Image (cartoon, rainbow, N blue to C red; front, top):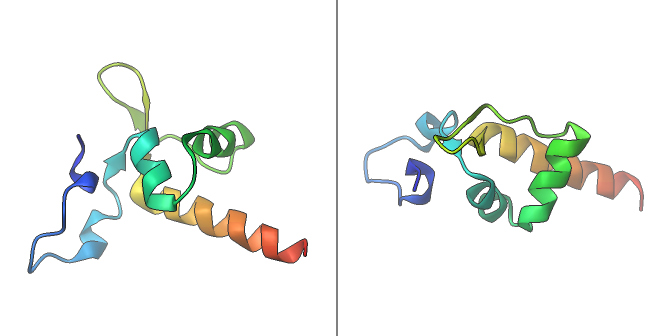
Length: 80
């Protein structure tokens, strides 16, 4: 489990966590979307993996996940 899944300790700045790496399932949970959505974002180039774990699975920066989620929601609003 990555650090992003752990609760924020008192006295820590949440902004310090923006560069933490999270798994696909953690990214989905943080963005409030399905795991398949994270994969779609990656395939479309909306979200780029920042690395891989020891098994070769993609890891994403917390900040990049938030940006991809925001961009997707902004695009959805424009098409109404």
